Length: 317
Image (cartoon, helix red, strand yellow):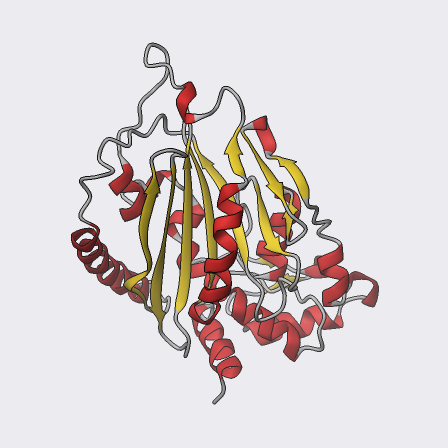
């Protein structure tokens, strides 16, 4: 069985359990609890042709732009070269849900995708942007972190979390090591690292590339989720993206005022370990688990003729 068929099989296993509520499908139809993803896809194809798009039309409808980007809330800017495209939060939601098969309701500041590859291709990837307004994160522990010991603890926690996911009906997914060891720049207050995960049913490991930009009142979070066979490309691209991402005047790390500003209850080590995952929403808690399945959804699209099928991610009640 080739990689693509394995990926599809894994997705179907991931989403095979029933839910207690009805899910609205295209054209106002209802999908009964327990219907397979193949059935949902078939119903989507049967919908009125005017509501279907080719992959190229769907990508064009995302209206990606390059150049100087100001993120929502004027919190930060990104000065993107023509190698990257920014997608606003509404279109990011469309890509995450309709294109990659994630559950709806994602709160983001947008997304960055490479301009030279479609996000619906197997080689496609993207960087989801969010913001944690938890306060000023002190970097006093920057030189004291033992990343090898931290990794051991993270791997142990990952194995336990994977067991819980399996018990809940999800496939296993465990952290097996650094894809790139953590590095913190004390001059720019930018932090990045990458983790490698092994996922049941997939013949290629998952890559979770993390960037954190520290600011006056919180942390700008950039998460790239792809597969390990894309790491060379992403490692080449991410430093450029990191360099052009900065907080706006008044929101920078150096703008911190100890007399009025709140200090976060965690430091750099917790950012890496995910000790504040409960505060970070979908992408911290489920990002590695759910976003990686974009590959499966893409293959599903190819199998039904290249149109965008609205496959709904399900969650257990």
